[in-house]
Image (cartoon, rainbow, N blue to C red; front, side, top):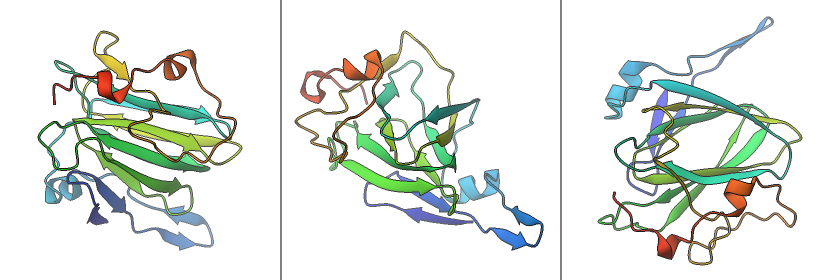
Length: 180
């Protein structure tokens, strides 16, 4: 498995080795030693799966202390543009975002450390996203930044997004006092 450090410090893309033959394929989706080599020490304690139809936007989600979460995200079926927004106040990339395509063919995993908001848009009729979290879900600690925040200005390229009430009513980036 190859670990690729991306443009924003802390974000890592893992490219697996996929073994294919006449029966199908096999790959390792996670190996602790590969995470350790990439200096990831998170203990992933919860795994979530979501199914989204085309044009669903989820995010931008994160949890604040005392239950912040790092995430390891991959697409099992379909295709998505995954987005991570840097919320670390002392980071040179504070308020910047990175967009990356994840799909069922390449089977890459995207590591998002604590201190980032996360979201995605489904680009397929059915996109199944699997993500591991380094802390348990906490309703008291969950936050959502508006997917269409004017300061972030993320180019979702979707004229008719499908949103939950929570995502439709996210806070503005400029109104968020980051604890990270």
